[in-house]
Image (tube, rainbow, N blue to C red; front, side, top):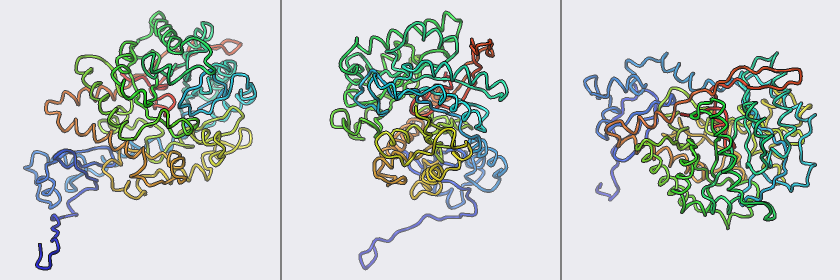
Length: 532
């Protein structure tokens, strides 16, 4: 205290000329340094002060690593760091690779949290036509990206199976001249599946992703049939997951790579049954579990009081589930928490997973495009959901009227990029989590009416900060390296490779080439890449 009663603030010595560019925060009793390349380092408080003062010399055990990672300027290889940064950001100029196709809005389920704004089964006017489907393919194949992933969504997309068949067959025929790598994924509730559809999907290597919210009493409560009609949805999902996984084995496919993926959406009912959810996924051999929170789109705005929860409740649920999944891995069970795996790939590898909602800037319009059943183009499926709620602000134009270059360069796409560029956003630009984080402007728009939002108060900021902190805390306590070995295994990808397609005169194909590729966002995170 000074004689006037004010507090005397002492600042650490700082020799900025000896420092590389970095951000920092505190994890447990350590200081975490992070770099734009994704490199990071943990220091004790005294060592951090020595780093700032320029007195942490070559005799210090961490000195060489700090130089290599770019935290100490003297001896830093600027060219190597530039190469690392270029590798991390190489997706920037690729163009849209994910093309979300809404084949129909019709759906036979009435999920309590539905974000897709479904319509009843008699609304055939919400089916995509073959003419519109042809325009989808023509537009998608003009993307500069060498990799194209068509992802079929709804409604329940298999209600309009003719359009799915057409897009697969027509795109393969067109691709004879384009030479791109094309993959297909289907996000289905499985309740409209039959053997004819299943065998066609298997023969054409369409990757399957379904919704599985947990054991019967949770799944059927979250996802009842519309009007209470039909058998239990849970039974249908179990039947077809087992059918496809059995057929993959019979076809000689590696079950580590070829299996049905599943998505879980967390409602209030899920929170107390987290262990049962994980055990169910393990029993089915599903190796990638995404613990997804609710999204502020569609019908959830009307049902939040029944199914919603506080952000803190979800984050407690997430931490419990993550630690249980880690314990299972220590016991030899191969299962991954998908969101954590995305962060870990940014933290532990030289690559970026190119998850379109977890990058800076966001991939809306530049990494993905969504096509509504009527041919309206959106920068993402979330933009379509906002439109379905009566706000057309994110509609870019219509197929046949808007070129791919005009879509990518649309003012709305530019606004979304500006609103998600972490380097320029207040508080994000100096946050230690910036190399691993991403902003979702459409979430901000729904929550606050503003693309930018108040970042520290947004649900996504709290989720991303918590997940990154949980991972770094556990790594900081990993004295023997056993957990890092588990986490590194979570980041590995192997391609689902099949022989090139043999197209006949009708355009039918037995297989499509598959390559390791980026995860595709909320709808089907593992639709294009199989994770070990």
